[in-house]
Image: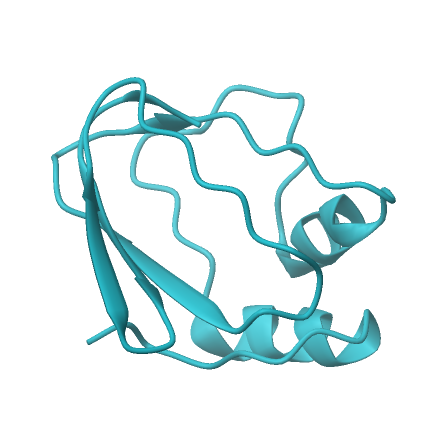
Length: 94
């Protein structure tokens, strides 16, 4: 769910534009990509079963803490974390 901001989402050949309140449901193992198109965005991600949050922790950020100004996860760190947790990076988004 996109709580604040705007984003583009790609799922297969489909492209969606999301605005505040936009919701996307993706079944497991569906390749997708997204790009935040506003200066800032707040997202609510619910994944069941749990586990993907460990990928983000390994990549460099504890999700329960506020995002530091200027924070960025490097592509290398995200790729290593994705591989360690059985994820595949399909982007960068178009």
